[in-house]
Structure formats: structure tokens, C-alpha cells
Image 1 (tube, rainbow, N blue to C red):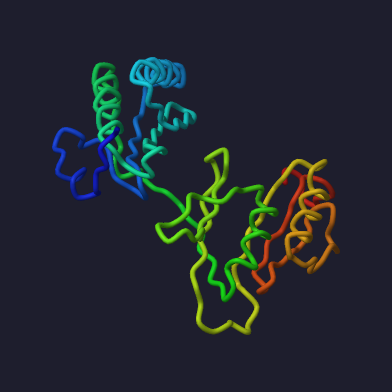
Image 2: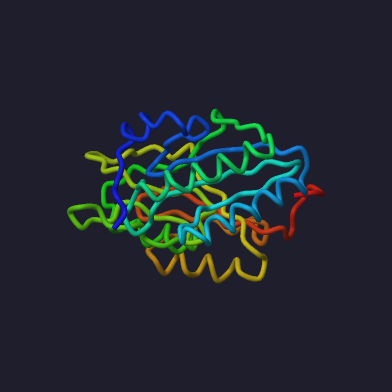
Amino acid sequence: MPTRLSPAEFDETADLADWRYVLGGIEATFHAPSFGAAAGFVDAIALVADASNHHPDIDLRYPGVVRIWSTTHSAGGLTDLDLALARDITELAASSSFQADPGAAERVEVAIDAIDIAAIRPFWLAVLGYVDASPESDGTVNDIVDPLRIGPALWFQQMDEPRPQRNRLHLDVSVPHDQAEARVAAAIAAGGTLVSDLHARSFWVLADAEGNEACVCTWQDRERSGD
């Protein structure tokens, strides 16, 4: 069984200066001299990951940026398996003289304050196409996540009193144009309301049971070219 590690224990690991602990895992970013070189680096990481039977999430971006995120899903957080993999990846990067960028590490969550979390969570699952995260130690589920691990996680913070004013922040959820109406219908069926379809098919404005808003958006009927 893998051994769980705390953030403090990871921070004491002197030979992993390229990596940073963020939200339950470790992340590193490396800059390669070209997109092709970066793609080759990804191939090399895949071979190492297969050999160790421990696989990170990898993001490859132009002009040659590779971001790696490693956590042990079966253990619900960071373990010695992640450290071993990180060491192998750092050695690969060093052998190719790729530049590490530790300051680039970042994980984004979106927080929604709620009175009745159980009442609004189904709406956000439906409108985003997300799934429940792993339960907390007491069995409650307060987070929802992208099953593709691309979009940011949402977590719900318990409020004691409602906010009567209209929210000044909402989410835009861009979906394929032929999926938009189904996504809107799923969100409404999950307890949401349709605030406005005045600009459909460009976007529909929806809200959960406590008034937190999201827009389901498509490319259709956009007034500005390039949207």
C-alpha cells in the first residue's frame, strides 16, 4: 500500500525543488525549446509512468510547456508513489536541460456559498456535466469535479444566512451547440430555474435553487465575429 504524505513532509524533500504541493497533489511545469521536444518529453513520461504503474495528468501547450500533476487517487492524496514518479520526471527534464518553472503551480477551485448544499449540488452537477468528489470523512460530499479532470473543481461552503442581493459572479459553461438544450433541460430538472432565454442560442441564463447563476453558451447566434 502507498504511504500517505503530508504537505509538510513533502516540503522537507530537498531533491524535488521543481515540484510544489497544491490541493492534494504535486505539480511541476517544464519549458522545452520546441513543441516537438515537449511532446517527446510527454512520451518519455508516459513510458516511466507505465513502468511504475502510476500515472499523472499531463498538459502540453504551445510553444513547449508541459505541466504535470500527480496524486494517488486510491489513497485520496499525496503518497510516496508520487514522489518516486516526480523524481523520475525531474531526471528526464534535467537530462534534456528543460527549464523548470515552480512558480507556475496552480489549482483553481470555484466556491459557492449555500444554505442548503444538498439542494443545489444536483443543479451544478447537471449544468457542468460534473460528478461528485470523494466523500469527506463524515460521509458528506461538498465538492464536485470534472470527470475529465480539466475544469476547476466546485466546492460548496455552508452559509448561516442567505444573501438577498443578486450575485455579481456567475459561471459561463460553453458546450457544443447540439448539446446545449439537453444541458439546460438537465439543469432545470436538477432543481434549477431558467432565468432568461432571451439570447438563446447564444446563451441561456440559469440559476440554482438559491439564485447562484450559470450561463450555458454556444457559438451560435453570436453578434461578434470570433466568439
